[in-house]
Every structure is written in C-alpha cells, then in structure tokens.
Image (cartoon, rainbow, N blue to C red):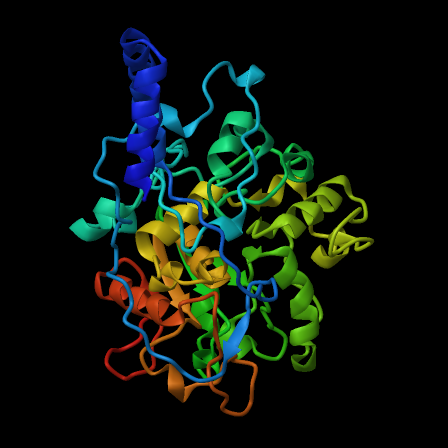
Amino acid sequence: MGNIFFCRAFSFTMRKIPFVSLVLVLAVSFFLFILSWENYEDESNWEVFSRTKLPRGEDTLIDVVQRIRNPSRLFGLPTQTGRKINKTSIYSRGNVKNENLIPIMDLSSFKKLPQWSFEDIYNLDAPPRPKTCPQSLHNTKDKDFQKVFLPNIRMFLHKDNINIREWNRLSHFNNPFGFMGMKYKDVMPAVKLIPKPKEPLLLPKPGGDGCIHCAVVGTGGILNGSKMGAEIDAHDYVFRVNGAVIDGYEEDVGKKTSVYVHTAHSIRTSLLVFQEYGYKSAPHDKGIKYVLIPEGLRDFQWLQGLLKGDKVSSGEYMEEEPRSYYSGQFSEDRFYVLHQDFLRYVRNRFLSSNDLNGDYWAFVRPTNGAFTLFVALHTCDTVSAYGFMTEDYSKYSNYYMEKHLTEVTFYINHDLILEKNLWKSLHDKKILKLYQRTGSEKQTSP
C-alpha cells in the first residue's frame, strides 16, 4: 500500500513541476537525511510503553523466595554499536555559557536500558594515587581486572565539575547514574552547594607502612557469631553502610567507623527498620567522613537542606532537618557525594545485570553495599569485605542482628546473585579478601 501511494505521488510530481526542480528537491532531501543519520544511529529508538511503577527506594521487595539467575559475564563491558565514538556528539555544540538544556527524557520512553555511543565514556580526572604500597590491589597483574578498572575515574560530584554541557550528557542516564527525567531547576540549586573536596577520601596513616588498609562491613547474617570485631577494627579504616547496628554487636562487627555510605532514604529508614535491634542513629565517630549516593530527586532535596543547615523545603522529606541525622558530626569538609559517572561505571563494567533488559530496568542498580565496596577499591590499597553474600548464604539470616534464621530477601532492583559471584571472583583473584565461613580456607588478620 505504501509503495503504491509513493508511486502515485511521484507521477503526480513529475506532471506538475519541472524536472530540474524535482532533482533539486531530491538532492536537498537526501543531504538532510545523511546529516540526520549519524544522530539517529547514536540514539536508542524511543517507544512509549505502559507499566506499573514500583515503590521508590533502595530496596523494592519482589518476593522472599531465594532465586538463582544466570549472571552476566563478570568484568563484561556493555555491548557497543561498533561505530567509532564521536565524543563531540555527547554534548550540545557551541559555547558552554550559551548552551541550551536538552529536552527532558522520559524513563517510560525506553523498554530497556538505552545504550548510547558514549555509554562507557567517563570523566578521568581523579588525582593520581601515591605509589607507596607494594602490595596494593592497584598493582594487580590480573589482566581482566586491569582491563576494566579505572583508578583515575571521577568519584565525587561538586559545584565545580557540573555545567549545562555536563547536565545534558548526564541527562541521558537514569538515576542514580544520571539525571534522566529530572528538571535542571530542581537539581542544580543543590549541586551548586556541594563543595569541592579539599583532600582525598583517605590517606595512609602516619607512621604506617605506606598502605591504606580498609575493611568494608555489610549487614549480612554471616557476621552473626563470627567474632570478627577485633579483626575489623584492626584495619586503618572501616567503611559501614545503611543500618550499621553496632551497640551490642561489637564482638562480631567491631565498633570503629571511618566512612559511612548512605542515601537520604537509608539514613532515615534505618531508624525505623532497625530500631528493634537497638539502632539509634547513623555512625558518628569523631572525624567520620560521610559519603552520599545521590539515588534520586529526594537526595538533592535532602542535600539542599543539609548543606544550608536548614529544613528540607520540598518533596518527600519536606520539613525534615537533615543535620539531625548526623548527630553533630556533619562537616562540609568531611562530606562527599558520589559522581554519576562513578556509579554508572560500577554498573556497566562490573555489575551489568540481565535484568536491565526487562520492564523494570530503570529500578535495577547495584546495592549501596556494592557501591561502598567499589569506593574502597578505588581509595584503599587492601580491602577486606565482611557481611557480604557468599555461596552458603542460605545458612545465615538476612541481617546479623537477627537472632533467628531468616531467608535472604531478594529485591527487584538488586541482582544479589550477580554481586555474590563478583565478590567471590575478586576474592579468588586476590583483589579483595572476602570473609567466608565455608571452612575452605583459614581466616587471617589483615
């Protein structure tokens, strides 16, 4: 039918206009088509589809049944189009000061995670790390890890590394990996308050061996009865995340906290979820450093109140006083916000789940614990992971605070089996030390 219509229209044109004019029209049309073709190839097709939105938050419950998947290949890079990447196509052209914002992209326009030609391009401007530690994981000879690990990737977002050009680039990615679906005016006032970090997140301890030794403590039930507290605290620095219940559990999980990683949702919700276990506040050791994962608009609303020392003025946490959740230890020079490039890099290069190809792709992301481990891997020389999922996870409770055995809860937005397999792979490659209770090896102090 379409071909018949075209032929009739063509014949009509031949009768009504001179041949030379027709050739000119066709030539101009072909030229415009060629110009637009590159941009067409660079972008995923936009197709609207309907679905039921799930509750927002780090943990969105799908069921409590343990499920096994076929995880994607560890260390696998995202599939690319095979075309030569044109970095200038990432940005709007012209002077940065005079650039316009691109139209807001709707999450519902994509059936699955869109793949852009610049998907695997990141800002690489982190300061070089000192080469004082001979046994640093950064010196690993493992070729697979070397291929995908970016030691100089930009880790932190602040007011000096964002502009309209960066906004337009990051608007191609869903949160927490970018600003897709967000309005510039809703986010930028908070970003413009984030100070540039004055120093690296961590430095070698004075008088030490020149290495930065770190423990990352999750909330997994494997720590219940582990008696790992003293070993954890023996590290130079200890990372904790989410509902880090310490009082009463020091023998198993230690008591020191150097870095606490959280979202606005997790620092608030932990008070409710873990209250029955004696949890009263987020860790607030003297001199503690806080790292925020900006997972959505509410985090930027939280940030604006936090950095102004005021109440949240809009959104889900309106009238909340963010600084009250940090027990007097909040300080701008000890507060960091993870950059969207860093978060996307962790997902793309290490934890690219098959679930990103499904209807709920926009909710799928690594856990806060996974992001915390990668912060440590990029900051420390040696990393030991405690309270993370291992092969025998069914033997342990969901949380180490629970006295009775409970099944591990799986959520639609986290691929826990993929993460479990990655931790074991990194352990086997001696890139990190994963605490396990399988009896297959002797646990040693760092």
